[in-house]
Each structure stands twice: as C-alpha cells, then as structure tokens.
Length: 331
Image 1: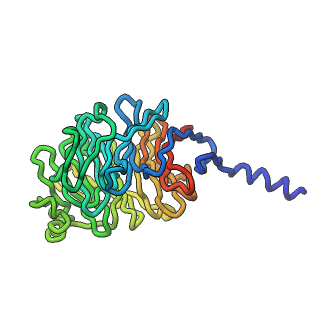
Image 2: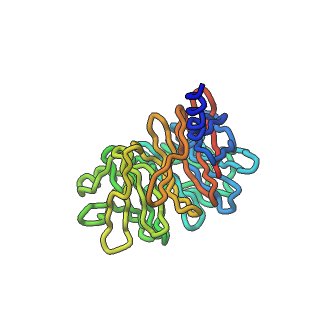
Image 3: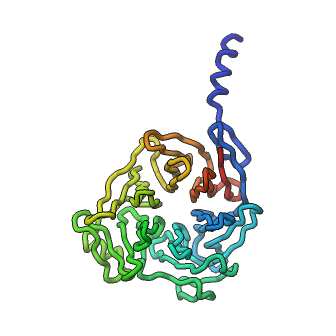
C-alpha cells in the first residue's frame, strides 16, 4: 500500500487530459469543438480579417458533389460549402487584396484565385477539367504551374507567391505578381524562369532546379524569411529571399518529429507550432530554444493550423468511425 501511495502522485502529475474529440492535451490546455465536418477531409484553415469566420479547404477528390472550400462561422459553428469540384484542395493563403489563393494537392494540381470570398455565394460548382465555372470570382491561375500544390505563401511585401511541389522530387517555385512569371529555385543560380508553367516539373528538371523530398506547408516569419516542411526528411527548411541571392537551409530538425506537416507562427507567444503527420499525429511548439509536445491523437490527423491571440484552430481529419472536426485549443 505504501508503494501505491508513492506511485500515484507521480502518475497524476504527468497525466494529460483526454476529451470527446479523442485529442489528448497537456495539462493547462483546454479544447472546444467548433463544428463537425462529416467526411469532407478538412485540411487547411484561414481566419477571416474580422475574425468571425474560418475558411477551410477540403482534400476530397475532384467530383461535382465533393466539397473543396467551406466557410465556418466560429461563434455558431454554422458551416457552408462555397465551392465543389476541385481536386484535393489543400494549401491556401490570403493575398494582400483579401482574395484567397487555393492549391490542389495532386500531380495535375492547379492554383485557384477566389476574389472577395466574403461575398461568394454558396455551393458554386466548378468543372476543373474543362475549366467551366459558374462564378466570375473563381479563376484558375495557370501561370502558377501544374504540380502538387500544398505549401504556398506570399512574400512579406506581397510581390511574390512562393509555391512548393509536394512530390518526392518536388521543386520550389516563385510567381511574380507583377510580371506573372513563374521561376524555379536553383541552388547556385537562384531563380530561373519557367517558359511553360503547364510543364513546370519537366522544365524544372531540365533546368536542374533543386528538388526536395515532399515539401508540405510554408509559413512566413516576422523577419520575412519563409519556413517549409520537408516531411520525407523530418527537416524544417528556411528560405531567405531577401538579399541578392536566395538561399535554402535547414532551420530545425528534431528526432521525434518524423513527418513535419503544418506550420503556424504564434505572434502572442513567439512560438512556432508544428504538426507531425505520423502514425500518432502530434502537435508541437518550438519557443526558439526547445520543443514541447502540446497534444496528440491516435487515430486522426491534426491539420490546418491557424492562430489568433493565443487561440489555436485546427482540424481533425480521418477520425475513426466518427465525423471530422474543426476545433480550437487555448490556455
């Protein structure tokens, strides 16, 4: 009995908190389910400027009945499908003008430009194969290249859109917003122009563009550099394109983060949030000196990080025998 009394306090001191979502949180953190998403494969999230809505990409296969972009009212949990029919909608960012740039994560993936998403009517159907669109607010950006678009982000000054090809030999690209010219990153020569964006992979290979093993998400940092997850290696890379010559280097590597996927900069805490898309999906933070695991889930993927004044939003995708969820955690 004495041994039991000695062991129990140690056990409870390390006990994490489980909840109805199946998420396991470290002590001091709380969770709230915002809405259920059925089997829509919710992926990335964007917080609207007024902070009332979350825009959500859906990684479903191309089908006129498959959701691609949803909008969630945070306070009520009301979820509306804005666009159907894209192919595995994934990475997305707001442009400086408030439009959404949305990428498709498949070999023939395109980038789509959604003008003024706040005014977009619900249930817009798109035929991505014949490029037939009901709304003039939705247009494909063919100059952004045809490849597996997952990671994308704008430069701090909005002059460039950076794009990562999520492929085992994917390259890093840059689209000029002024000239509409796509370029590929070369380790020694910098940015080399692509003449035929529809054949971006082939041209990048001929130009000896530097390739990486399955790049995933991108995150613009306060100093203007861009972080990129390279899930096949466990590396988080840093792109510095602020000087005369662009460079890409390894920024972070942690032995316990095997498949870094999504990134999010937490301005309130000055933390970098990282998801690990391994057999057990994990949520980590890096405070500039050390790593700490905040949450994990045994049977769902934590994806789509978005932060707001200390609150962290994300999706739980591929939940076993249960609907996917959009939720938030907070201290």
